[in-house]
Image 1 (cartoon, rainbow, N blue to C red):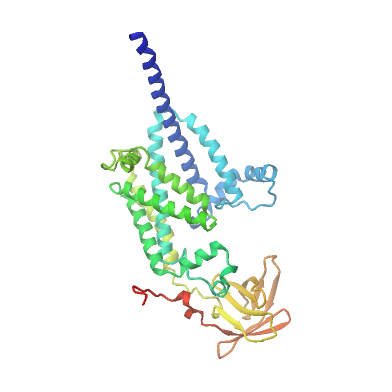
Image 2: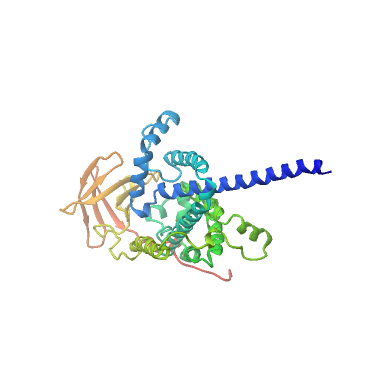
Length: 393
């Protein structure tokens, strides 16, 4: 009888050992990938130091892969989300993560995961707080610009439609921004960290669905943020979700940190990041264009091929044609003699005079013609009105 049981015990022990090694290697692989992603994926609101480091380390190899394997010559290498350069970066990080998962031995696993999970939690917290502030202060979904408001619904791309529609609702932005801000703050507190991770998973799932549904170009980034959240709530977290019995037992995130001066560094880093995030919202500098033009003008001359002129807040002059609603876009600046300097996408530069009349209309020279246009009060358009009805009759 013992002879028959011995092989069964051996097989069971082998399976248990294999499962343990597999889970440990998977955790190391995931942690290594996320840690590298945090280090090398550039965030625009943290200046460009990440981009410089990433380009210095991976730039040449990325260019070789793009040109010889993907046949993408003259492709911009900025590692922005959903770009070919980001795809190459992800592939590189996946391969290097496999290597690191075999280099890091069992003795160093616990220490490595503690550090990695703290970094991931802090990273997700920063992203959520940034998203939250952006929505609350309407930096992520601003009110649609006049050139969008005067474009026919059917001529707009799906991503612009979504962005513009969400930008018209202050209530939605306040609620969603507050939830994301609250989730980010919960992640910074040990007792509420698991709840914050669950809220983060819900937020990133919603964001990923929206990005896929409306073809918004941050799909890879939102997917990785969602997977990072799943990585942080593994094991005991999933037991809580499945069984709904009690709060999870101690995990790596709940253990006393092995890092010295942890409180000081957490406060220091958080303070620097929050200041960096918050400065743009409290910038009182006038946001209107340099010559204080109204943002939308209707062309009054019947013989002109243009119907509207738009002065975008980011210093773009946009001309809409009457027949096709085609948009001609220039980046503009103002010269010392109050003339407008236009620069097109081919970097051709031209100089034009513009006169603001007493009735706020403008006279504008463009391509050997003089354009007369009057201001349009687009602020009264229905899309920009805050209306709320409890009853429909």
